[in-house]
Every structure is written in C-alpha cells, then in structure tokens.
Length: 117
Image 1: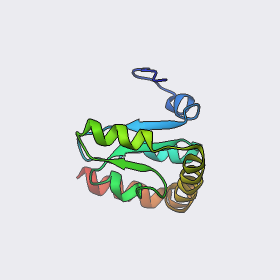
Image 2: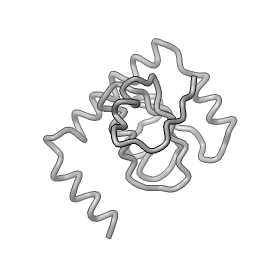
Image 3: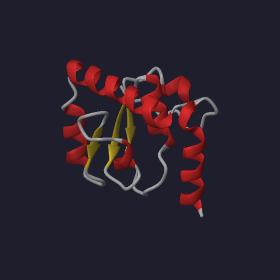
Image 4: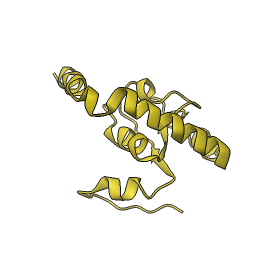
C-alpha cells in the first residue's frame, strides 16, 4: 500500500511506520531520508546514484535499483521477503550507528558543508 503524504514537518512519523522507504531520486545529493530510514528500522529501496550508493550497500543494508528503470524498481520491490527485510534492516541500523549516529555528528556536518560548497 502506497501513501503519498506531501510535505511534512515530522517525516519520522511516516518513515518509522513504513516497512520500506522508496527513494527514486534522479539527482545525486545527500539523502537524509535514507539515513532516517536506517535509524528507525525502515528498509531503504533507492536509485543507484552517487551519494546514495555510498550509504546503501545493495543487498546488505538496503536495495538499490537502476535509476530511471521501472523494471529494475519492480524487481527490487518484488525481491523483498520477510527474512531478507529483517536482515537488511538489522544491517541498516548497524550502518546508522557506525556512520550517522550522534557520535559522528561533527563529521557529517563537515561532509555536508563540503558538498554544498
């Protein structure tokens, strides 16, 4: 079931209640919603783009699909089993703790500043 919510000031309310975060971005950038998904145990399914593919390791902590390919997106979604979902979410949360938790906040801010300049 897909629910389009539009703009919100509380994205974690929605991300945290979802089994997957579908992120079909077409432009490379810092993908904060993917990090939020990793944090709350939601499986990210995202386009293969620079920045995104540095956070998501396909089939380890999320699922990547070919940018602009509906067939690739459908295959990615259809590949999700309960066992696979649970394993990827567990690894995703470990990724969040290792790379994006408060202990790395200063490093993350430095990276974002460099990318934006």
